Length: 161
Length: 177
Image (cartoon, rainbow over all chains, first blue to last red; front, side):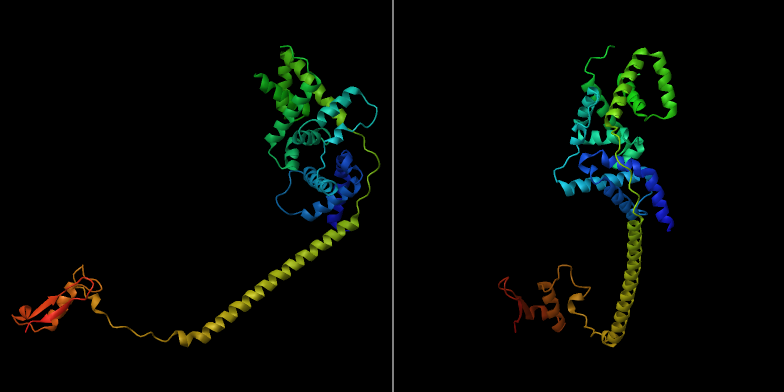
């Protein structure tokens, strides 16, 4: 078998589950998660060798997966937004988790997307910057704003100084 | 430490975004400042809860990678590379042909181009002794020309008289005799 195919299969085994989770956690994309995962790897293979080498293969694939997801959403519904993913009740769970889910769903889109890449995929600040194609300082700033906002919403009691 | 700076560091720590040495320094600082340690605990709890809230379990196994689709992508890439090389080769060939044709045309047209152009005689206007005011025509130039034509006797100046009735008419030289 072609060595390049073997390389991509190894990547698929390593990063595939995280990418699959990335798609499955978005209700609008969950149904087509497996196909989107395949599309991600095909697109990555097509673009391999173009441009500068990525910060990490993981970040590179997440960046492509993000674009694949956006394209799929555009094809499905032009006005589709990712917001409902957090508001959708899944099971009978802790009220506090539900409240947190709603609070995260209410965050501005850039902050929510950055926070989810951090919390769900555990990407580093540099990797998130590569995925979203923004400076690391912007990643840090978005995360700070998001965490502050969540804490203010869920712990409204004033802090004793 | 400023409260804003501390808060930023604590959020970075809760998210795991601090370098190990900064993390260690901050932890040492928190041991000394209980209020900062409480704030760190609150932020860490918020982040932990957020992490739990968004960590939905995955359902279903992962489908194996369709290697045949990747093979077809690779094959298409190979064809694209070959096509690119072919296009480059064709462009070089076309450029060579065009340059050759142009060179041939220039060689054929060379005798015509080498025909010498007729040399025009120098005109009177290029006389370096002419006064600076002299242009296409002027009174001074006309007078000088008439005087050159006239015999250089002492009465020549009295014999000929310049007549210029109107600025829109050409001046003329009259013979008084």
